[in-house]
Image 1: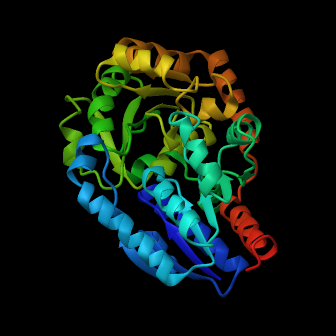
Image 2: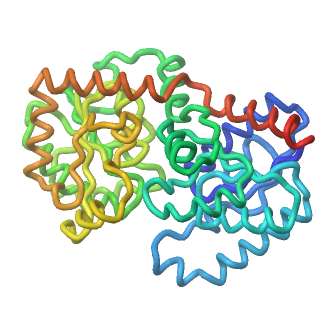
Length: 383
């Protein structure tokens, strides 16, 4: 069968590449055409556009590039119609992808599948109308989305497991256990217990979060601070926000770092889930400008109680979220102290991690998704 995929950022490229490999396992004659990235290209098929030509973040950049965005949408729609795939698979990136879904649903007979559903449970819940109208099958990687879509909105979805569970499980099963002394020797670190700092993957996140994270963690002199460098961010960018703190940056070693860390300070995002799956006690830190205003909006605009995936999946507070007006050096330092020295507090957090992991289910999300997709295409859509 012919599969057309659209992603808009690096994480989508990663998840789509794993899905494509799994689709090949289910359908050896699979052909791929996509708006995607290098990881997808490595699996095979034809790349029409690289996601880096699509991704504009923030209100002003989007306004400045409206002509390019509309041109990319037009090109994408025309290319789908010309190639006539058996299915269109959209991966996250809702601003672009829901527009494409609307067109494909209205103008063609091509089934629209959505892998990694838009996070409308957090904001823009009105998009459920578009999803119900334009998306034939939705594949979720977050277990609480089942109740949101099926319970609240009467829209049946497929929960297939979470790719982060796959990635962590694969690392732990394939990488030999590294002794602590070997870890610190490999990265030129002293032989002291580690506080891991994961300050986000975007420059704005790093700028906003890293200085206060380092100021808070530097108080714990019995520990060394090790910063996980994000892909595509130069060491020089980090250095301007370190403020003279005694911290070492390591790149491409986040999972080995988490395997050895005693505790972690983590910005919100997939990193909170990764940290939990490595069973590292953490505090979630997310500074925003105009903290009190953002805190008000969080209470009155966001539709969810939590911002970290750990708490969202567990459905309760497993890790402390220091966000907006509560993200201060004093509060981060206090929380880190509890994580490091309060054994009962650590134990309760680790128990919460076990519950969260049980809700995620077993590894195998791309394989589960690929199997369901191919089965549906053959049995429900006559492909």
